[in-house]
Amino acid sequence: MRAHEAGALHGDIGSRGPAWLRTPEDVNALTPALWPRSVTRGADGALAVAGLSVRDIAAEFGTPVYVLDEADLRSRCRDFRAAFPTEDVYYAGKAFLCRAVVRMIAEEGLFLDVCTGGELATALSAGMPPEKIGFHGNNKSTAELSRALDAGVGRIIVDSVTEIDRLTALARERGVRPRVLVRVTVGVEAHTHEFIATAHEDQKFGFSLAGGAAAAAAFKILDEGVLELRGLHSHIGSQIFDASGFEVSARRVLALQAQIRDARGVELPELDLGGGFGIAYTTQDTPATPQELAKRLRRIVDAECAAENLSVPRLSIEPGRAIVGPAVFTLYEVGTVKDLDGIRTYVSVDGGMSDNIRTALYDASYSATLASRASGAQPLLARVVGKHCESGDIVVKDEFLPADVQPGDLVAVPGTGAYCRSMASNYNHVPRPPVIAVRDGLARLIVRRETEEDLLALDVG
Image (cartoon, helix red, strand yellow):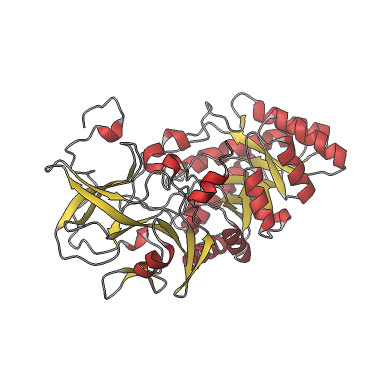
């Protein structure tokens, strides 16, 4: 690969794709690990989700459209609930949140983690019991904290001395004693993209463990006695496959628990190890199952507590991507196909970086398949790109599609449930796509498509 001043996405002219990407024997075959569990290719060659053809979805709802397999999402909630029966499982709402999803995860017995006032408002409007809500965020406003206290959220993860002071003053005014956890920056850099590795020291989240700020925060809360300190919180990153980072994080956080016990005579009853569990976006990804995660995390926590002579605290985790990510795919329509004289074939679809910014932002990899029909053509290494006025508007960097892919075809991209709709934008004034939930062959709209009228309604000039 040669360097390019516009970035890595432009430097691989003439590339034949990454080493892990193999030419498929059957370009129509699906890799089950990448798709919602009910997705199949029907006798007519078109994909179907829960028995509903993508052709029918496109005809009724248009494209682009995010397609959520409701039974798949619910089953993943149940998988985590079954794997962690004595622990608290918080769905990380930042991955994707709407009222329908709030109701689904609540019905399946999960708690909910929010990190802004808007997410909190969505949770409350959907009927999520406030005691089952945790409130994150590195810069919670006075208004947000006030709303959380007035609603009675179950816990607040404090992130700065300013926030502790702010929350303490609000609690005194109301005569309440909110439960809090201290977010600890443990100095572990997860094996992930640098922009989403959140536990190393040089970043905005939490209190530094190495510098003593985390201990000072805990002592401050205990000494003032207004807030109820329940435990410590650590989150080491996102799209993580290696449990070694959690082992180091747990060791360091539990050492702080022991320090607090020794200094103040208090054993904190809770420990949150965060989320960030990876999913399969391509065939190179091998995520752990919830059962495997539970076994590893319990073994780590039990061993570290024994080493520190601590009682084992109640553990909580925060899967978001691991629940909603694989349960959704995005359906697009092909607009143009451009062959650059053997250099590369560009397949342009009717969405792009406004509905999936992750490829441009994180250099993320995705897969894709021809969805509206089967093909007998040979595999063609293609790049799926969007309609936006950016050369970096790439949805799928490298994928084998049939050589006869053409305008009007439908292309589906799996693994788009997390951080696609939630990070979507109106770049180039493109309205954001809808989200539909499919179950038992029936589709229902859960987030409607934006319209040009929606865009203009905000333009008061």
